[in-house]
Image (cartoon, rainbow, N blue to C red; front, top):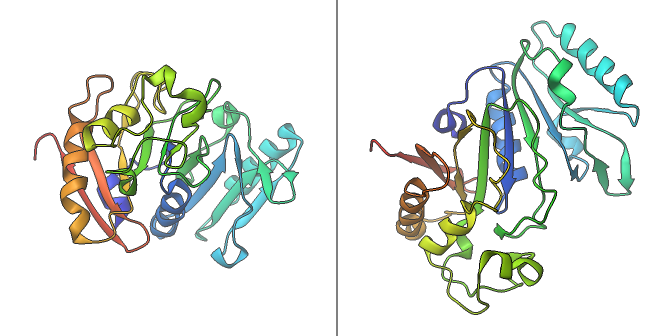
Length: 257
């Protein structure tokens, strides 16, 4: 169970950032945690409309005040039924739903929700990303931050084919095109002071996730990458979860291990 490795406190609000499978991880956690109670998924940026086959209830309105009223009303009336809720504003494009404001949950009662999961940035399906100014858009009052990276970027050459926004942001991160992405370099990018974790608030628990570790042959690289993430000097990290959402593989390692 992925949820047991993250071990989020009940009723927590979790921000997800980075690349390499954030949405897939969120849906996996929704499926697992919904056995404990109703769960809510949203975004502060934009998302593709969820697959109707996932048995989700979508609450959407361009009127934020009305949207808060609708969400509070649904939450108030949750009894024994366990729902998987998606909350967004309306379409910005035919295949994109707009996100909600980062202060949206300041007036929402979390007590009847098992967990709230927020997708705080996009990566255009890349496994490693450099964030531009203005992102990520972290949901306020979050308890956890989960920076995500795909192991398939390891040993690849640095460049726009491998790293999202490399062409426009490489100089800011002092990265040179063509250099090999080692586990140490990947950890340095993920946990960079100007990287995807840059706006995290003091007191937020950071639990990175290394995805796409689809086979045992990739376990060694995942373990090395996890160790560099644990040793990073920019953000406090006590546990790293790694595995494959696609293949259902999951492990975790902590500083105490």
